[in-house]
Length: 445
Image (cartoon, rainbow, N blue to C red; front, top):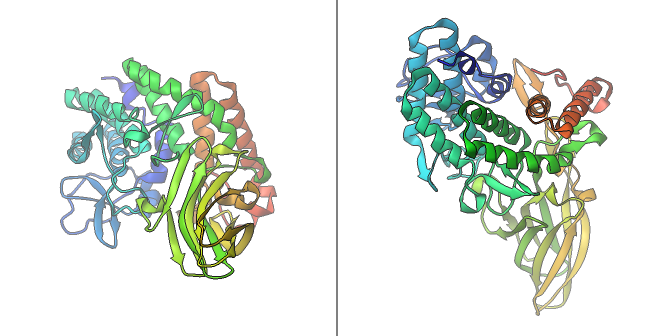
């Protein structure tokens, strides 16, 4: 038994579990009697409302009942392995296996890989997609179970899960080619990347450790390509103006088109240089992660749209075709947003960024969406996790710890430099009114 690896629910894994695991303080009718989870996770577990389905699969309690949650599985498995390693009681290892088997029974084959797709009930995530973060967590815990049990089924499953991390987003996967390398997408979209930093960094570390433990050539290649991309992209996540780091590079905003006289939008899309074009469609889909019209009349049209900071300094563009029964004009406006530490919210103000002609002959126009007006849409990390009655910024501290670990693994100076810089930012918060007067906890959880 490789004890060092079994004890390797690393600082990264524990920190991630603090964000995403949950505990059962009571059992609802029909829930199985599972062994206790670590007491030090109680506050976070309660926040995430975890329960167990009859076969042992962890789920989230919702207004519609208990819903199996893909990412809860690996965190609960890791916690049970911790309990087993600490107390040497077989019931904890049996529980870990029960959760793993329940999760594996819900996975599907995709492009030769094994994936756990997100259900429509978890509406914050695109239904039918799978997550690079979730898959990497299963890679880690299934390998731990193989070491603990010597059951080749878990070894084989971990290899198939690893394969899922190299399936391109164009084929429904999570690997996106960018800036001479590749990313592992926590929130995968086909038309553009979202580049969620903490999920990406976590997946990279897990793949690296799997490569070290198994000698997997595929894992080594995946890690190397992600290091190449991260080296180029990391500066995009830095926000020195407010001493913070970005959570991801994709964001949501609203665009409004106001006609002087009656008019119509015949087609519209958002173009991200280097990424591609996403049409604005009639209905909301993919957990809100698409462009869609939210309001329409003869005098105005409003659309919820995705923008992406990956193109900076080049702006994203609105491509729009306008028509009208008679010659008129239309103002293109963008909704302003403000970072309030706990959220990125609309301030109910609109800024006109262009005036376009419209008439009986349809006219296609291109409108640049200036970063100066988009403001905080590509938002900094938030103080939004309420744990033990206090609001914490979990992700900025995760960025620091994960980059420190990656710097140690790779020797890449920029990783160490940004980790140190972002640690300095956190030390500045008590002296900055933006943070000090926000009523949030400035120290890490």
